[in-house]
Image 1 (tube, rainbow, N blue to C red):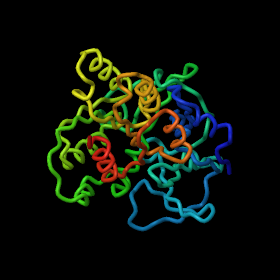
Image 2 (cartoon, helix red, strand yellow):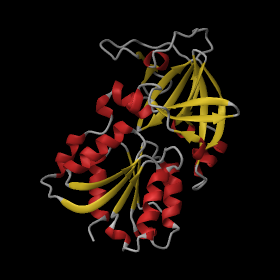
Image 3 (cartoon, rainbow, N blue to C red):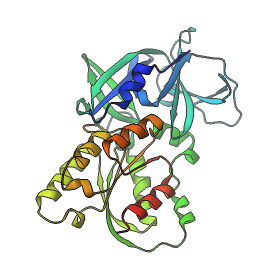
Length: 307
């Protein structure tokens, strides 16, 4: 059993470098990647207890210590050929969205440090098209690594763990807002749910960008127009994990700019943890909130745009 090391934690705390630590792993000989910030530990595959009426890709549950964790057969989810369960296969135990899951894979290759600029959005024909399960393709030392959208995988297997648009109704009667919200989110599924939730909450003026670079380009153009910046944007809601430029780098650039720094930035990410909160605070984020707490996000936007 192997937990994340102190050195890896220190890497997570570095500020605004626009880099990602990817854990490479294989399934049926194909190479995939996961953001190390999502990985709690890796361990040899364990015996699991099957659960009746569960999703077809759920192998069952196991209890490594005092916590019962659901095990997902990732190869089966991806429709890949069965790999050899030879006793050396691996569970990658993850923690994001305040939930823990184990993904059953063939082997773990190692950890690579890659610039987000080197990660490209996959072609639409790869792994399911525009709303597919590949969030990016990274090239590292001649290898192409498919970075999977683990939030989408969990949302499909366990929809109740994802953003619930109807939770906005708990905020009571809403009126239409004239504020403009800029969204930076690379997941098609999550962006759709966020925008739908904000519309339901009365925020009709939404600008959607697919990553931090697109958001930054829009902000620079708005600043160079000569108009007051609040004439263009009232609040920014950004994911952290995104190709080309991540949310931490975007926050750093905004808060170091004499004009743009007045725009409130909310980091809305599955990765929010105590370590990530420290990093986001260092970079100047006004608020940080873990997905899928969409009603809480709306309340935060209400407060930050009240003036």
